[in-house]
Length: 257
Image (cartoon, rainbow, N blue to C red; front, side, top):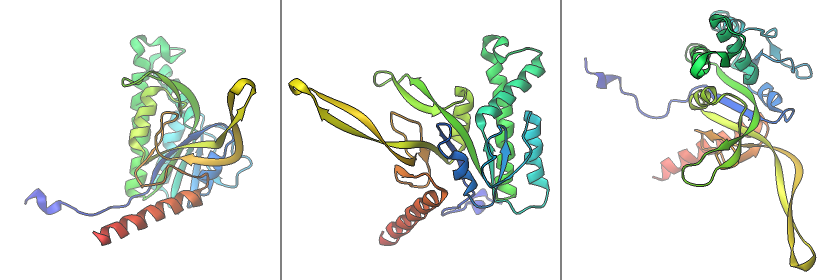
C-alpha cells in the first residue's frame, strides 16, 4: 500500500503547548488558572491565593512523572495541565541526576556532563506531556521566572535580553517543543524631558498594565505559531481572543484568494 494514501492536508488544530515566563508576582499563575479546566502540578508553594485544582506539592522529579501518569490513566475532565514552575522542576531534575551519580552538585560531574544527563529527564517530562496531548487531548502551560542573559549575536554587538530562568540546554529544548513562548511584562512608556543647555533625558514610566509579548525582539525571547499580534493583555481571554482573530483573518485571506 502506498504511503501517499496516508497523506493529510489542511490545518489540524491540537491542544496548545505554552510556556509563559516573567517576573515574580506579575500574574503568570493567574493566567494559567483562567485556561479551560486546568489542573496544576506544583513544584513551588505559591498557589495559596489562587482558586484552582492542584496536586500536592511535588518534592521529587519522580513525583511529577507519577502525577502526569495519573492524568494519563485516570478518568477526569481536565483540559490543561499546568506546571508551576519550571525553575523548581529544574532543581528536582538536578537532584535526581546527583542522586544517580552520587554527587552533591550537578557541576561535580565533569565536562558539564551533568547538564547533558539532565536533558534526558527533561525529555521524559516532555514525552509525558506529549502523551497527554495526543491521547487525552490535554494542552499544557509551563510557567517559569525570567532572568537577564547576555546574548552573543554573531551579526552585531552582544546585548542583554530577558529569557526563561533555566539552563540553556533545558531552555532551548522546552522552547523548541512549545507552540508559544510568552513573555509576561509590565508595559513601559518612555518620556523625554528637556534639561538645561539643550540636553535631553529619557526615563521609563511604568503604566502598571500587564502584557504578554508574543514575538521575539532583541530585548526578550518570545514566539507563537498562531499569528498573535506582538502584544496582548495578560489574560487568558485576551490570548484566546487574539488567536480567534488571527484564525478569522486566515480564513478571510484564504477565501479572498
